[in-house]
Length: 240
Image 1 (cartoon, rainbow, N blue to C red):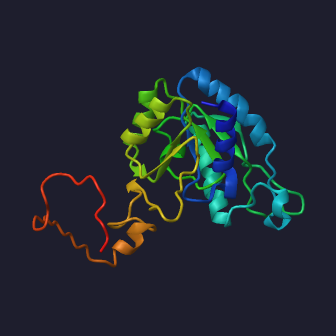
Image 2 (cartoon, rainbow, N blue to C red):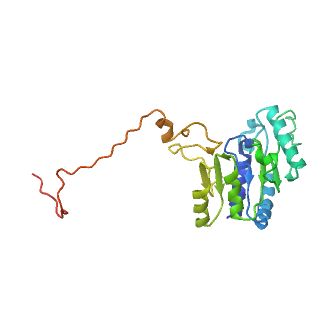
Image 3 (cartoon, rainbow, N blue to C red):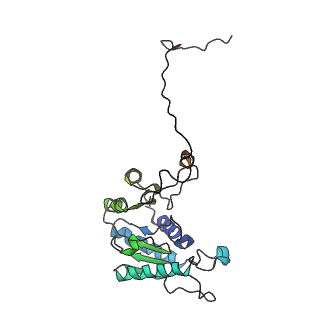
């Protein structure tokens, strides 16, 4: 994988909108300790440069406060839970504050390493500016993490190897898959929707599935013989 592009994508997808979007990237799964160390090395300086502030600052900030005090408390509580359960807290956003906005519902960008599937920060959707790194020994281990997860809205793989990308996309049991693309929300004329516990109802939300709910399917299978001549025709017929 292009590690710099992967790190850029993770920061944008993990901390954009303060992590308060259903397709936010919350877990990164590098394969091998060498890859994991290289990814952390690139993530930290990018995270430290993030500008957090009030939404009234417009384009001068990368993300703003959380939506409510309850959301802020919940995110901070999950960060504390990750520390208590043994994850490595690389950057800590719990004490983040801005002068003049001390009562704002801000949480600074938070990065965990050495997260395991048994931890609450892995099992729960944090819905805040928190990115967790789960180290996998092999590609198959990384794929199994996604396959075994009860949710299946979106996933992505970063790789320069076409065989690996094709294998991942064909095997993973997730509704929307990105290849070198962090948030795999398709264009509106394709269907948006997840699998497993990320699915609701019989059909997806937009694209062709959005109107199939309101239609009746008619299937016609036909075979005609009358008027068909044997042999091929090799010249255009003259027009009368």
